[in-house]
Image (cartoon, rainbow, N blue to C red; front, side, top):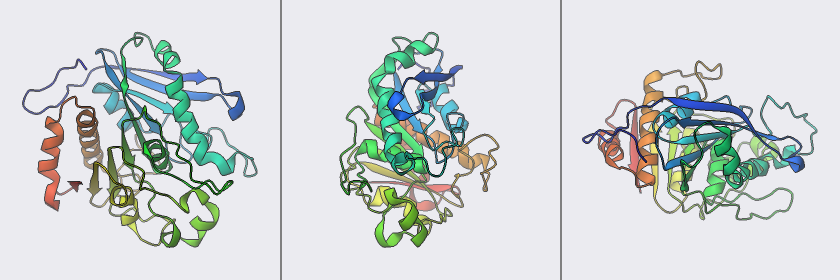
Length: 313
């Protein structure tokens, strides 16, 4: 990837970004065409791709603090609007609702199947992607979506089977404030109403991933407390890292959008840390440059940093 890099810090200089929306992929069997936002740096070649899955109810317009940062530092970021988005307003009795978890995965695979269309929709982007370097990222419900592409298995409530829906084109992941173990870890509400959380199996999620967890993220879906969102790190094999953010709630300081109403713990310094660490991780995972990742590991090990702790296995 051609982008200016500091020889000592591994930090990539920000470049201007072009962002196009909506890029529309026809999807007649889905009931709605798949609408995307695509953001890319205006310079550079061999650009890796990040598929970014939004949290429940959000859309392609969310997560600017992450999407803009990654794109400005050398990644092409593709953001689908999934069927659970408030912008689509599915009725409570819509027959697609029980399969929302799976349709999200299919959305991400549809993007990979149509990267030619994605490239063509952004002026000057054609021929500049590195299709061998694809990551899946996601926040909350989107973290499960990304995890499934990496090997997480979810028991389909309709069939009772936990199929392998992973995609070999996806090489690494960033899972932000996402769900942990099922069973006794769930509240009665979650066990009854969110069947895709009942029986997750992390033992096949072998692809490399960075898990980001807030230690004040007390979700109403678990009886375990905030450490539930660290389960994708603790329960999965392979090369994994865990960034624990001190004092962070579910929006992790504000990653879901600029001045987003759902952010209850707004903290620009925390968001900046997430930007730096996730970018460093993605560059490390794709063997572009590990300098900034090594620096982050050194600064955030041991829990002495005021904002968080970084550990790896």
